[in-house]
Image (cartoon, rainbow, N blue to C red; front, side, top):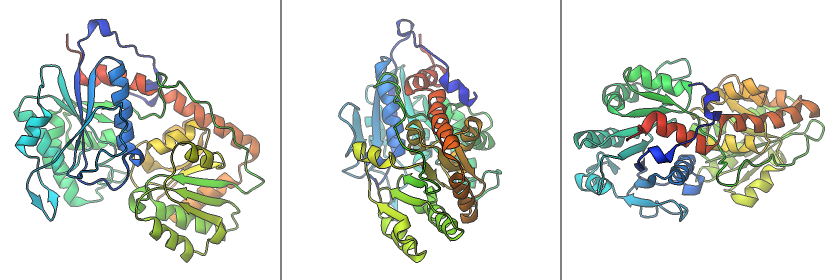
Length: 408
């Protein structure tokens, strides 16, 4: 499937289908950030909402030993926590107890499908084996959790995880009813370790026609002369999200004469490290580092930005970028986000050529040199880009038809 497939209209004829019993499993031994700040949680909740609207019985099953793991999950999302309960090594769970699996499958029948989100080793493989032994069909969405193993050229980054993925996760992928990949690069990883896997390619998105319709772009002024505001809003995970690349690149851009400012908002304990990094570069008033912002406060902050920057080392169509683009913010993103093909095809911002501070600085400088007229075009294109990908209702319907199966 091409990216454009996500925008094709697709209607579920509920009269000809039996409702499915869809149990969405997220394996998260520890919750380092609020659920509302977790992109994977947000995607799963959006999918559940659309599936329930289509008539399926969809629910969130969160596997975690954290008693506060369900904090922040909306009341309209049926959710249950399942303690892992298996043996541990260095405080980490190695498998899932049979009693926990029995609880997960209580009341399961011929229309039950377990949808696992994230290939979290070794728990993913253990869960997949347990479901296979019980004859319960399952599928998996990777959510970028394997993208750190290979680089964008397909070279192995981490040898031990690559071996594990080939010999342990690969058979689990092959037995799955489907493996949902969000980008072509992610699909290639699955095909590499499990050539017979039933790969289904569908994108993420950031809006629902059913829940409020298509939001209009937020009104914002073009950059004041050559003083753009670059914004970052995501979890403060330095290596994963490439926050060090963004700050080092911004510092290089300023040293080369750049006049823009950088504003960051996020959750997590790494905020102090980020502030120290900015101080070491002497960025002073040119950078602002905030804690997490949500709802109206987040919208108000982003209304003053001109570009949304995310320089991730590994990611797949992060929802923060999609939400920003839908609000009319051009993107500055690395190829590792999976968004550069969309951005380049739609003229919706700039791709970062490499995972280096120099490449980030070059992209920021290019954005600064963009005139007001071209910036307005990119802002409109960013909004249209996400509209073209499609809404959650269409993606949920396509997933139902292409992945879950259509029991008669």
